[in-house]
Length: 381
Image (cartoon, rainbow, N blue to C red; front, top):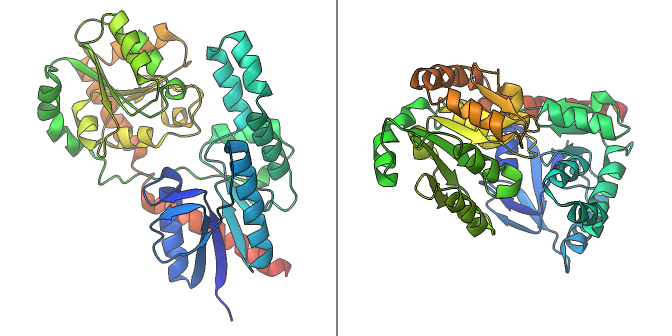
């Protein structure tokens, strides 16, 4: 009897990528159960024991890039005898899709809130965005799609609201976090990190982690910080091609000494340890891994109601949820967490909230879903 064959689709595969981390433990478990895993990608770095197939047709522009890759994968699907094809890209020929990017139409709706009317109209008329929306609809409403992995209830509800898809195809599986690596013991770095940034230990430090500042809400953090006393500081970890624009915003608000732009870091852990809270007022994010990491480190989190991470927040108990553009509400929440006892109490509650969502529980949920789908296929045959 031949082993079960599963294909994993990712245009650019990195072992340290968020989507790849999500499934790595499930793949390890499947390989132990005599399952053959094949990666289909344009480029990759590190695949473990998985076999890799290159799918790299020529392209110009992102529309041609995505459409060409999708056609290439579906052609391979016809040639190979895969029992299950799981995609992290929008495809019409996948059995299982992980909606890690959420719903594209909802992202455009949220982004339109911060654009001038003319730019918002151009956004919706853009050929690439129209292609993505059409491809999503065909994929979600295809009868051949067996299941969708949603990384939050928010994404599940959006898919149900936008598309004609049976609810039983949608499975909410939260990303896991390494609760040993991301741990309150990282507070041992508090003094050294603050000393390097010239932030006194008795001042409040609010951490922002994320590249793509417009979507993640860096401007909202900066504007909210301007409403707080001089003892409040912000640290922004991540990169953006318009970084100078955000630096100018901070300087214009008189915050050039209170907002620290650190760029991309290979290890954010010490900065979780140095902070009092995380602030991520994202316009739209299906579920930011950094929220899991921050809470595991014992930090309360302030995020938006269009972040899947909001599902883990109990208002005033382990953080706060606000509209991404409500500067007064974000600032008020930050003010509450400038009280050391409140930040400590809510941080302890955040750690307790996140402890059940470790990598092992995520791996088990993924493995169970794979096996259910494969068993259903076997019974159908």
